[in-house]
Length: 139
Image (cartoon, rainbow, N blue to C red):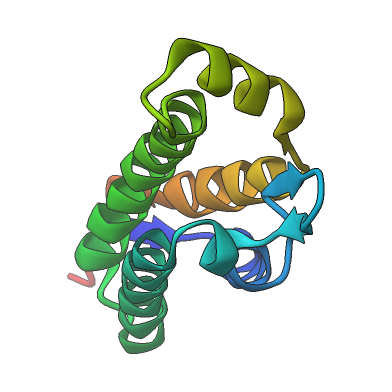
């Protein structure tokens, strides 16, 4: 039987929505702080769909699907961080310009908020054995 820790699930869900919509992910020198939508819109929309499915499963109390999409969100967040890292280190295709660009772009605290949110979501569902107490005989 699956049991959900509702405070962890709701807190993780709210933090994830705040992280992907508002929090800065990259600091670009001339442009300023970029959130996920400004960094890459495809990553933003895929993340938004994954977290919408998580919220939908949480609302309908489909805990197996919620746990599955929470693990998918965890894997997606790690892949997304790796994709942004490799994209910023190989943007122009020239070693000189890529090194200069990689030194000027800095990662912001939005990644930490997203990681905490996804970890809260992934650890909010646990499997527990249902213990049945024997009924005393009334004879």
